[in-house]
Length: 473
Image 1 (cartoon, one colour):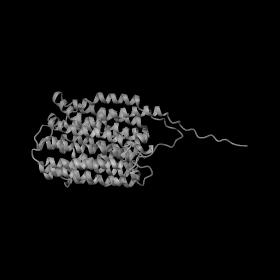
Image 2: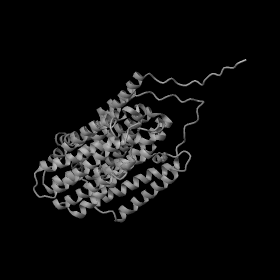
Image 3: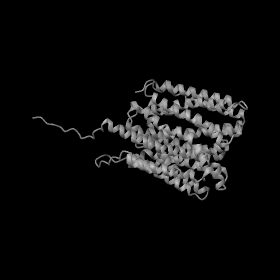
Image 4: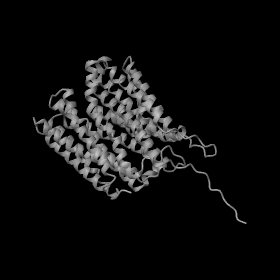
């Protein structure tokens, strides 16, 4: 007498065409939302002087409209994996969009500098969830063999932001009023909410027989979120004051670094940590994160040098400085589109190494050009464009390479680690660059020295690349 066993019931995988449709819809929603957040950051940076006049507040105070956004963003990013596991990716993304759009409306209604800073923090809470949640949804839905092409699409906002943002921001504050730099987000935010509600895949209903969702790691949250906020606060103060040794800079930065280190120790030993740092033990992912950390430090740290060089060393207007920087942003975005698609077919290690070398060469050429008084503007812009080519070959391709071989279930943690990594090292680079420029002086020789330091930071990104794969999976 034979017996038959019934195999356990499993959810059938969706057909390939349905999977492709879902992925295209997700990518479309994430691109629209990312364009909104990237434009917001570039527009606000252009309008800081106008906001200072409107609220009759010192520029140092108004600059915290950007600082509050960054601190809130850093504090909420670690919550992304827990929120996605608890309420689902779609609900988390809708919540992020709603917070960002609401923060934009409140910021347009601000009555003084303090209220504006507070409402920018509300925006930051939404913005901090948009990037890791959106990236996680895309990475979990993409086939590993086509991940590079999908990530290239996510790089489209990087083309739009630096090119359109400064021009749009300047036009809005000149033709309309400062309120419009926030009101412009409302129709885009409403459209993104409608698209996300309609097009994103519904969150799966909770299976009553399944194990309960992991609880929130409260001790880890109380270490990581305040730690990141204090670390970035200290670095921002260092960039503002041009020193990293003042007590108001050193104390919060060291306290934040200690809290982040304590979280790192807990995350490697806790049963259900807030963020699974054991992912860094994966050779490829760890090497990708390290490469991005060093490259981000040099590249994003140098971004403040261009506008300052054109306005302080060359005496151009803010609008002209923005126009002179636009070709670099355009080159970064276009190169990223090509390189992110090529990463699916060529050796990741060779492509990323070539990008780092090109970026460091371009930064060194920029140092040589800016150190020469009255040099032709096209020579400075041309050297910076060479650096932009290198940046486009590294940023998205390195993210794709780092995460391609990971299981789908770990993509949420991977996207969160990549987001935190970018925020920390961009802030470190900005602080180092500000201190270097403050020490060297805002003269052509001073800019030459500071650009040379940025070139050295980019070159250091070559060190982890031997651990990157020579072939894609």
